[in-house]
Image: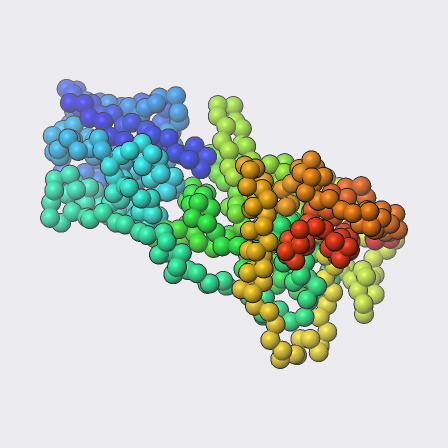
Length: 513
């Protein structure tokens, strides 16, 4: 007897429909075809034990399992459950009539338990797009898949639960439904860190507000203990809330990478990723023998924080250049290519020199001649070119630290950021690739960031007197446009331009001696 069951295979952050065909006929040999990897080939040993443990019968006949389409490599142990159900249906132990309406995925334990899988949300979305009736998967992944509307999601703990579903047993699991809007309401305002906890540093808070409003990348430069990391960790709290579409996209990436918490469903807060400086280039951008999303994709729609930037290997930093521009990364192999989203805000921090006290107001730098310049040169010009704001962080004095005065909360700053983003959304409503000022092309900069004669004179003087590089020109105009948006100003004024010029520390000639 021939039976067909359906499942999914991951391709990047999306899924493809896989047909699991099982034929049981006379003979004694078990065979799996359709380009399976070793984990899939070993599945029959797990399946046989699970079937017996659940009190069912493993046929002692010829069993041929085909995973179609045969030109796509099938990886992982999540095909155990659909193969087991196909064998039981082909041997007449369960009714095969309803199987064609469901996606079925999950790894089996030897005792018949169903183990979690990766990419449940992507597979559920594919099942809905292909108009399947439901999705049967491990109970641990059920909430994640249940946020997909118009799809019946059954979370099962054992192989017996699946048999009960198709035998209409009164003990069968019931479909699970999760309302995404309800999750958003429950998680609203649950920011872990708040700017009200930071004493002093008003100029840095202002710079981060501008960065959040325009989607700009930021570099924080200052001595140890000045508060760079503390400030960076609070940046996600002032970014606009995730939309449902962004939340689904972010959750898919974390699901594919296996980073969702147990029984998690939907990520409702913007991710904050802070990899250690010993990270490899593959771990940062993604890839590997079996490609997985890297840190830049896990930070999609959120913040990637690189602490002590010069300590990262230069090759690691250089691979970020293209994703920073294109907001995606393509991983190519001989037989296939996958693409992962990588639309993140980069915030980096660094000491101004190896000892950390160059330009310190109270302590002397002990670095020798040329050491500071060599330290800063670890960051290439092309990468620095993609960072809009360079902000010098100075230590907070005792009076500010001991002050009892209440400072502005992240929620208040976020309201201004949302207002500026709303203006940009209206400005770029006809563009499919531009959502914030930081993403403007040079042509758009000329169109959107017009300045008057006085502004041109100020910018020319700044570039000549401060020794600003040519690459700073467009960056200054983009940041000035964001500052004007925060002021709800239609035109870029002199104060906006002057403040934007102030945020180009590393472009100044002689900054590092």
